[in-house]
Structure formats: C-alpha cells, structure tokens
Amino acid sequence: MEGERLMAVAAIQDVRDVLAAYPELADGAVRTLAQDPAGQVHVAYVVPAGPGFDLAALHQYLRGSLPGAAVPAAIVVVDAMPVASDGTPDPQALPAPDLRGLMPYRSPESARQEVLCTIFAEVLARPRCGLDDDFFVMGGESIDAMLIASRVGQAVGLEISMNEVFDAPTAAELDRLLDTLSTEV
Image (cartoon, rainbow, N blue to C red; front, side):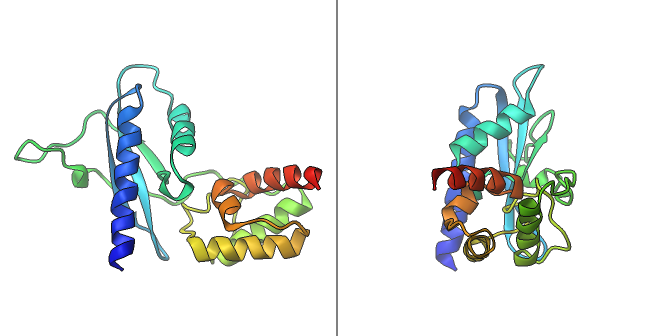
C-alpha cells in the first residue's frame, strides 16, 4: 500500500513538472480524485499564459510526455489558482470536475471495433464503451490491461501486450494499432 501511495505521489510530481515546462501555461496544479467504481484519476488545472490557448495541443503534449497512467483524465482551465490563507497555492480548493462523459460517445464503425468496445466494457465493468472512451479515465489498472490484451488476442488473433493497451488506451487507438500489427505480419 505504501508503495502505491509513493507511486501516486511520483506520478503527480511528474505531471506538475510537465505542466511547468509547457510554455503556454502561466500556472498549473494537479489533484488526484477518487473515481467510481474504484481507483483514482489525475485532474490537471491550468491557467493559460495568454489568449488563444489550445487545450487539445496541451492534451497531446501531456500524452507524449507522460506514461499513459499519469496523463490527467481531465484538464480544467481556470482564471487563477486559489491561494490558501498563508499565501501558498491551494489546489484542494479547486472544484472536482464531473468525470462522467468526458468524451462524447462514438459508436463502433466496424466489427473489430465492436469487439474492442465490448471487451473494454466487460473488463472495466461498464454498461457500454465507445471508441473514444479512455481506459485510464474508466478506472483501468494493470490487471485490466492484461485482461484486455489477452481477450483482444483471443478475439482478433493478434497478440498485444499490456503496455500496448497503455499506449493505445481507447478502442479507436487500439484498432489503429491492430491495423499496423496486421500489416507487419
């Protein structure tokens, strides 16, 4: 348990460091929130450095700079960071976002995508999973990634690893990865 807590602290610090290095931000903070049914997710709160801030570019930067599990489930743009009475930053005073439905539901467009969405939903105990629903946002953990990798291998006949699930955390991304793998065979 202590090891998991230290890993979570290290992941939060990694996210803070990556946010601090992003030139389009004046400030940033990270909170870890409990997520139903289990697990925790990171939420980044950012103050843009100026007008024309591109949230999608920041999300892409974070995905390229952090391990999959450390990428914040949500990025919330705020005007300023709250400050505690002693003058220090107070990220706990930031509101918790509603993590449900961060991505609009996008239906599978092929038989393989349908299989992938079904596997994600069953392993992660969700009523449904769309093409863009993120493994980490849905509370996925290492054991879930192993199960998804195993079931995908059985269903489509291509072996994938747990790390490939981490690197392609949506059914759409995993489908693209499988396209690449199938052309290499």
